Length: 447
Image (cartoon, rainbow, N blue to C red):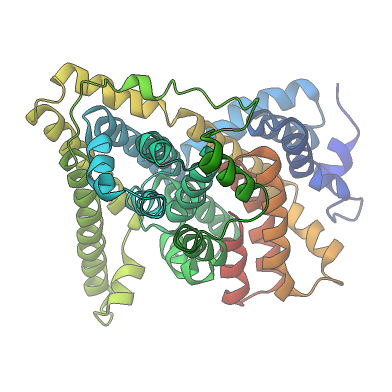
């Protein structure tokens, strides 16, 4: 079944200008994500609608969804590097967790948590240390500190707030984390197709001062823990836990703890099994960026400055080297410490890799959605539609509000980035050309 002129000539009117239909893929993805709280289905349908608008045929659009848009997204060299980094980091996290590294790290940090204030601050501090993945942060810190906070009568609501309000912000600010791997992939994708000749990783680093929400949240959490100034529903939860000893409200249904069952209670805590791989990753990444950048700077005859070195270095390659080295270190410690046999270590590594599959699928679909939006020239339509009334300086704030709404409705920041990056970055680039502050502010607002 084919429609006329491939749906207004690939989303445009008779004069070649992009029409309102060019926003349908992204709009459908946002609406479905808000309604059904399922980003995966929302992205698939968004890409399919985009493929339909491009081809004008339902049958052909389904075929192009699979054999063109998804395949092209996976075949891109930059995309492949991000996918490999995510899988390697997942494998390293699996080894660190299964070998008792996370358990030992939590036990080591939580030794002095004898009061409610200390327990809450310790939870926050441990969350800062587990910066490499927000999901692993929530699981590790939450499960490790829960017995401590339960004993001291800190409500589960307060524990959940501290854990969650630390996990995502610290992962979004860390120089190396699974979150950053994903975000750098989105930045790289948009820059490549907009013709912006900037290193995506360097751009991320330059946006850190503009990330006001995670920075302020990381300061707000310890302030609340230290002062004990709870309010609203949290105040009621804390009073209930302290006065009545009920850590959860009546009728509450805590999430399943099935993730914790994968780590045997008999496995002793070994903090070095977590700390050493992290140190290896950071050192190898720093050394790799320096050596690669230095070589390229000297070859180009440029001044040997740190900014030039970082700017010329292939950060994606350095991060791949680092996560690969981190996997080797985690495997060696897992076997060498006697925590796991070699066979069980491989199982732990592959289990960690599997834990990243959902994130990888989201990434590929997000890249596919971005590609169909570019083919439909969605950004040009948005610029023509809002360019006359929106002030460029408002773009970061508007993007942040939209990101907050989508994230609240869907429950996933990664899904929010997947939906908004293909729209927000081109919009900022077109409405504020050459204004790095607007571009950096927009990128840092998508959390």
